[in-house]
Image (cartoon, rainbow, N blue to C red; front, side):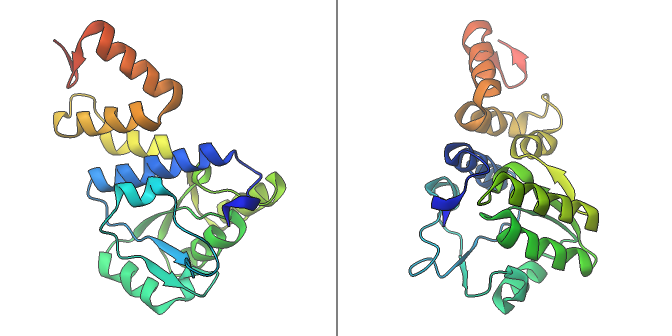
Length: 191
């Protein structure tokens, strides 16, 4: 289904989902991966997701709104979390539906706006506006990574954070690589 995404460059979309998947794996965030009939309709998941989460039990559903799938809801409930971070391939469908449904049920929902895309920029923007008006909170993939890290002196996740940023973080990642190379910066300290 990615072939028709026009609101974001597909490389950027894949990169941003890579940031999310690797962040979730590294910070042990309970993660639910879901798709619509992956073998017959939606197509395969991005490699950036499956590489980070190779053991993920994928919820393969028929519903456009994941919130209407019993297996998906069971997985959400099993996390015991009241805060959700959601993205979806088509912002107006795969993201919008579960976000609005989760908000209606009292969840605190963050929408990763740059890990979603839609058929047109207009469709993406209207879906984001609709979710925000309903109470969702916008966030970007790189911001999510950095909010989980929080402190560069937090050495237990420093290598993970800088590694994800160097691999997927664009200019920010290049800057980290430069600092590590030129100034021998390592684990939040100068060597």
